[in-house]
Length: 347
Image (cartoon, rainbow, N blue to C red; front, side, top):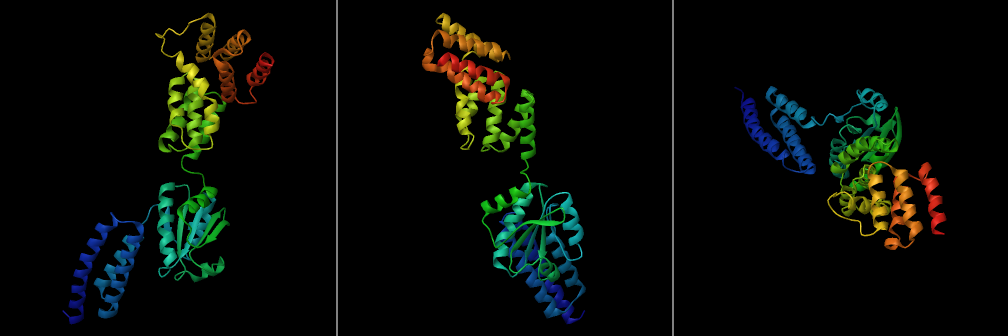
């Protein structure tokens, strides 16, 4: 065996050890650390090639390492000048494709890249991340006017629709991506909203609950869940969601529904005697009618209570009616009719 070949085998032994450690660490460290390990091993391999020549052992080690390191999520891939047309332009007709123009020597690229890859993995198909090494694909960089890196360009239907240069913080990256593709739960949320509008209460509840369990800070999902529960007469469950309502813009609307939830919750335990007077009996009978889906009769009952005593329970029936209007929506015929009736009773 030639001296150079023996030295190469010795180098391979050390390389095997380094790769074993690297693979162990890759499962436990952040992406930025993984990137540095990759760079170190890549430099080590190249140094061995320079010192000992392009032996078959080194060639196999080098190409095997590169294949291992470049294997990514199915939604993240490396793109070259030869594959750009198919992997980016053609694919952008199916989903948004975000192209990250970067280089191994670029410090900000090493900061931005792992965050983009994390968000692409989280997106689970909401968009594709294509990584272009400008050192390997200079013509692509020139064609798309890349003057500084990292440069990120989003493609849809074969065209650039959004872009930025530099390493953005994660919150701004999320905002950028949100404009390109809906979040994974957004389709389910839209379906739930449609079901709520068509009064498929149980189906809407299931969709909203699914989103809310995955996104407990999602105000739209929480509010939709409350409405779906109230429409089915389940005031106590709706009240529990309201008690832990996320800090979101929807909290104002949610609070308008609280009197309705408390009213319905009061009549859920059938064994509890609630009626202390004829007016109490009428008030809670209206709640039972609402829970059974007889909304018009319930609204009539609330108006009757107010006609007898506008200050009954410090105006609670009025707040319940306003909650019902919020649940039905301003354009609902019942809302329009009974809002006028309420005004005539109160004023």
